[in-house]
Image 1: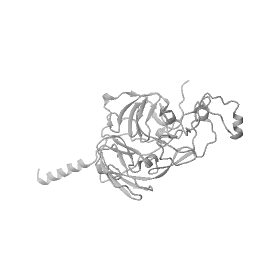
Image 2: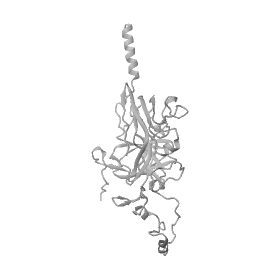
Image 3: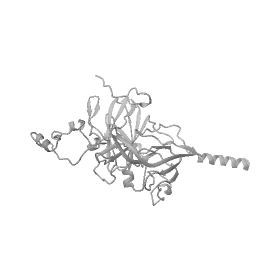
Image 4: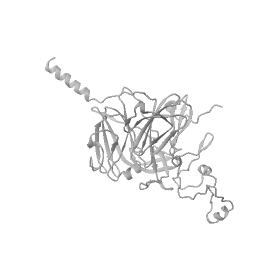
Length: 390
């Protein structure tokens, strides 16, 4: 081989090693009530564009909330790439204050870590900052600000960053991303209170509260991956009915196969992701919800007196003279309260009582339905309620 041929061969090899690695194929993730961020290839680099901006988000029909997010959404659109890819993310700030983006759990150069004042200057309003790095891992990660975190994350600024492996060891058929969030939206208002620390009244999957949450539609026998992320102030034990799932990964990486065991409830601590998988082997409508009881209901008021077992007979008329339309409540539980369509302040959801196939469904908040069917509609559209055999 002469020198010229050797140099050409070496240059070709170097060019090949610089190209981002590609998975032969992977199942794109589905972000219920959200979407995936598009990209364009620019000289071998996947280029994404995020816009930090105020957004209006419908938590459920009848409730629209003034949030902050990305590209018109909270959580922001899911970024999806492959281990080995070179990515470039242009972040434009349309907020009224500086921001930054931290790539939570991603192994990258220090200058790309996104901590305002420490690893980079803040992104001022009206300007764009460019992040660029090569993905050296796979798994379920997040992005969120590290600038005025109390306000910006409390108002909804967060999103998924999913990195697929070059080779999928156990392929899945359906792959879902769900962000767990909690808010204080005072009755009759539309702006979340970013200063509250522990007394929230609205709980959401991907910034939607049931009945606004989209169902997860899967075909009987399919292997399902569920990616859960939490940047709220509380942990959330997420429970599935009719199935058991296995924890296969965290934001720190894969769980070794010999360390996995079945669960029906997986706790998602603050500042983490949890990735679980299960086989949908039981047809039906199966709830998926947070098992903290107040997190699976809507619009609670926490200052009412405890009236359990307190007889209110004979006093309703006297109270109505002072408070017209007074309703005694709580004496024998709150079952009827959840489904009553009593007068509420504007932009405020009922506690529960969404119509179901056998009557009102009392759940709300962090609640949705995994709809497993032997036959699924085209595009995995909502198939309606499950028809149970007699």
